[in-house]
Each structure stands twice: as structure tokens, then as C-alpha cells.
Image (cartoon, rainbow, N blue to C red; front, side, top):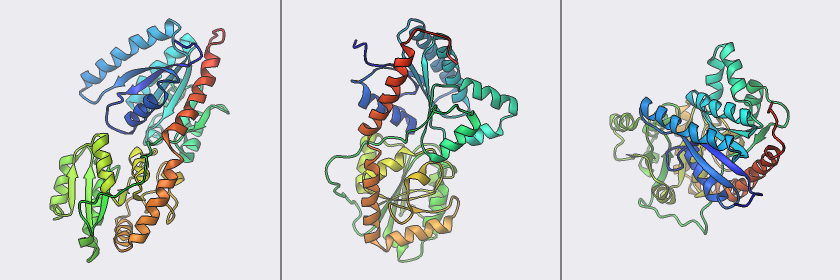
Length: 368
């Protein structure tokens, strides 16, 4: 083992799991496995309470053993909210005992709302367990929110937007429905990501826009409810509902798409948005979370207020009637996505790890 390479305990969901955090984990391993010694510690799997508890128990013992044995330089935890804070807080407390540097990578779209609902005494406890050498956030809105709530010391908060794997070579659209604007939705079905708002917005499209659009919705969560909503709206010939797609299936769908629609109420920085932009789709999204940092209305996408179904309908109608606008927004979105390329992102993360590893390798002392 090259002693100069940082030794990282990366704690979070499995790299082959569903959701944006798993995608970030997978890209981290792909990009940095040859530049750092990384041990992935799977602390969470979807399933019953027994499955989740067993996963956590299997994760904590080898992690503590690695820290106690002096192997780890940095503990890097992928944080959401709720139970994730309890799980990751346990790892962070152990790291402080053994003098291991710590990184909290904040992904949770609803962390701030969850934190603000806690009683004051529990907020104080959350601040204590989430103390870390660096806290990584996805966008400027999160910077202010986490700084205020966690009361971080200067220099500990770092802005690090999510990465994306940018397709190589020119994009060639493989349309399976010539003459129609293909709108793609990717994500967990439910109220938070606006799945039902999108269905209602498509239902409200007037002619001839209604006959010029096809929508593909893919994800997990409330799949049956979304399918029923499509049937109730009489849109089963317009909207197709698919379950979760693996990366190859996702890319095949994005190669067919023209527009990416995600009318969310809460977000961090959705990986599906970055992936669609990298494929050159025109985004129609809400300015929530770090999306407001990413999308400039009328330049590299269209912004609609959360919950405003009429505005989403108007945006979709506009795009079905103006192919040049779709093409221009998509091209600019693709250029924006290149700023988030995984290799550039990985270099920034590696620099953070290396800095903290150098700190961790100094004579051990009780960490603040």
C-alpha cells in the first residue's frame, strides 16, 4: 500500500443501490479507487427495520476496528436526515475517540425541515453528533442553512456540488416517437418530486400541444399510485410509467428524450437532473435546493414555481411548440453539466481528503 494515499472509510448506502447518494458513491469509487485507499462501509439498505438494524450492526464493528487499529485517515459519511443522523452520528463519535478526521457529506433534501421541527434539546444533540472537520454541501442555499443550524466554525463548510458522468462523443437522438416531444421524469414517485403535478400538467395541455407530447416516468416509490393517476386522467396513451432503471436503461431513455421535467418541492441537487443535462435534455424544474444555483431561466432550462401546475403546463406547451428552444436549452444544459464532470469533482474531493489525512497522521490528540 502506498502510504501517501489517503485511507478513507466511506460510510453510506451501497454503491449499487437506488437514489442519488448511491450514484455519488459509485462515482466516488470509480474515479478515486486508484488514488486513495477506500473501504466502502454499507450502513443502510432498503428493507424492514430488522434488515436496516442488521446492516448497521454489520457496519459499525469493522469500522471501529479499522479506526482503533490505526488504518483510517478519514471517515467520510454520506448524510441524509432522520435515522441517517443517528447512524452517521455513531460513526462520527467513534472517529473522534480514535482521532480520525471526519467529513459529513450532506445530501438530504429535507434535512433543514426535519431539523427545524426538532425540540431545542434535540437540535443541540444533533449539532454535537454532527461535528466534523469538513461539512460538504451541494449548493449555496445549503451553505447558509447548514451554517446557521450546525453553527460551524469558519473554514469547515465546503461547497461541493454533485458530480455527473458526462457522455463521450456527440449526442445522437434515438427517437422512438418522431414528431413528438419526449418528456422524461426520473426519480422517486410521490408528492415531494411532483410526480402527480406533472401528470395534472400534462392533462391540462391544450391541442395541438397535447398530441405533440409523450411522457416517460421512471422510478420507485408510489409506482402503483402514479399508474392509477395516469389511468384516471385518461393519459395511458401519452404517459408511460416504468419502474426503477439501471444506469444502462436510464442512458437509453435519456438518449430518446428532449425535455427533463422535475417539479419537486424539496431537493438537494438531484443526480437525475445532472444526468439529463449531460445528455442534452432541456430541463423544466423548480428552483428548490441547489437547483436554483444550476438552472438559469430561459438560458439552460425553464423554472416553474413549486406546486404551480399551470406554470408547468405553460412551460411544456411552449417547448412542444418551439423545437429550436428545446434544442438551445438542451445544448446550454449540456455545457453547464460539463462543469460538474466527475473527474473534476473527484480531484476536489481528493484534495479535501488529502488535507485531512495529513492532519490525521500527525501525532494523535483528542479531536475537538
